[in-house]
Length: 422
Image 1 (cartoon, helix red, strand yellow):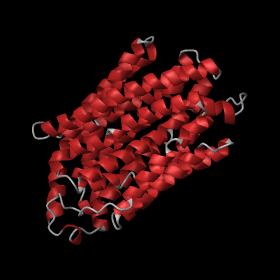
Image 2 (cartoon, rainbow, N blue to C red):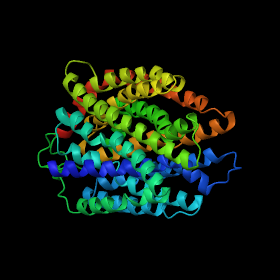
Image 3 (cartoon, helix red, strand yellow):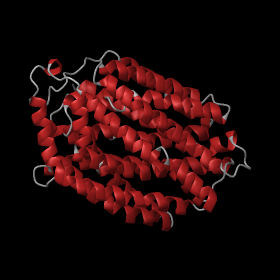
């Protein structure tokens, strides 16, 4: 069980490294593959993230459906191998359109991973420990993202932006092959279901119950608002800081970009790691003391993020780095608890479907569109601050939605557990 968790965490780490290498080297790719006279250059670069996420969100329900019916580790292994090879092919791109096509394939591979991996963990650990364990799993988000920034910026400065994509291929292939041979955990085995997979069967009425589940709805909408804001800002933040500090694309500019990615990556690691783990631990400890603790605490911390984010935009450096740390800490505080909500309020037989529906929604209305929106507004207003302010308002919306959903969470968790035992 522990080996499987380590393998899942390692794959998730590579997953986010692959995603954020693109953001780390965006200014260099824009210079090489797009015309300097293109007034919509930032918009087009934002579509690289959008294309990846559209593919990811559209195909995730298909893989979620398969994950509730087939051997999950096999689907995971194939997905890892596909996105790893596609990431390597990004480094071979000699045109914007080839790079766009490869990002679509990366999205397809990750769609075979995203909705399934949390269900494997849910079948290895009981409800009382899922917030903490899923926090360890999702700690790969800040750490992997940071490594993507650091690795991408460092390798691009040392060699070229092409090589930044090549270096992640060998570990990805190894992890994908290891996944193909892991034993499958018993579905519902940690939910008090006697007989495990033999008694846990997918049914459409259960899907209907999921749609009517208010905790699931509020949580998904809250995650959507957060993903809209954070997804767009995380894609553009290295470029924003680089340009704000006066960097270009010459040798000195590439060196500055590498430095920006290093500092931004380091802050993401420390704030994300501590925020994710502390958030999971605190919410698990308080789940019997605070009504709907997972949602209530997540909502409260998100409401703190918005003023911190404003300080990031308008305070001079190096003070902006300080407020960025605290904003990231609060953002990542909710990572484990909000994903645990999905697992805890859904029947074991449709968990992969539930995560797939969640993935589709948060990306369709979230970071599939926000990078392009930020790029378009920045191109038109010549102000990244204006673009960030518009999407940053979504942080407040996410916090309010989680606070509203908190009052339903405890009851829906009990109902899901009782339904699994029935």
